[in-house]
Image 1: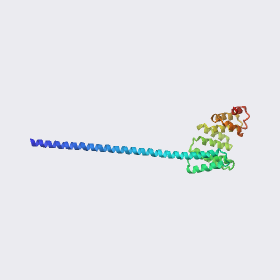
Image 2: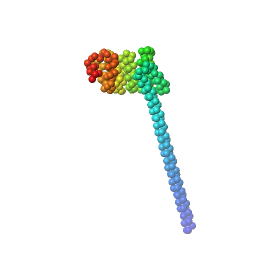
Image 3: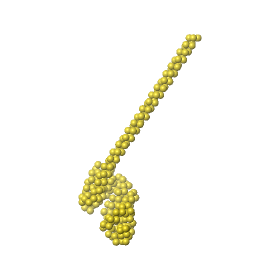
Image 4: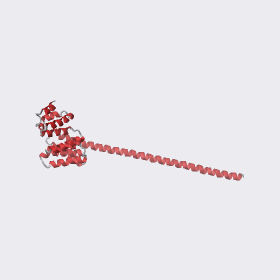
Length: 236
């Protein structure tokens, strides 16, 4: 009896050891799995952080590039409206350099295009260059209000007033730009249409009141300057 009891006790102890071993192994294995999951989670966090940092770096780089392009384009635009007798050539040079380095710069194309338009009275082939550049600008950014305005202005320079009016209106679809209203007013004035000239000039003056001083000096408005409606608008 004692011998059987010892055997049973031995079996029980063995089973307990196996059970304890199994449980211990399970705990160790479970802990190992937890450690593995924690390591994966930390790795994923690190990768996400690295992705965020890379995205931020690329955004900063893109912003620097954009600021650089805008600074150069602004310089060209300032020259375009300055008094330098060689300003159109200078604008063409600056914008050509920008386009070589950044061929997706719609602003540079638009500025170069209008510079070519202003030079079209010197070289007739500049008309083609002007429209090619302005169209390229709008191909890169269809809703570029200033690009649409420049297309209208180019047509006005070429004496194609119906097309100019159409593109000034297209410009106003995306941007309430005072020069688009002014451009329309100038065309109607050249045609002797005082009502439409005054109507559009009112809109331009609402946005930029000092346009009144410019209009007083411009020969474009000679055909309507003596009308009461025009005088009342400009002198009040």
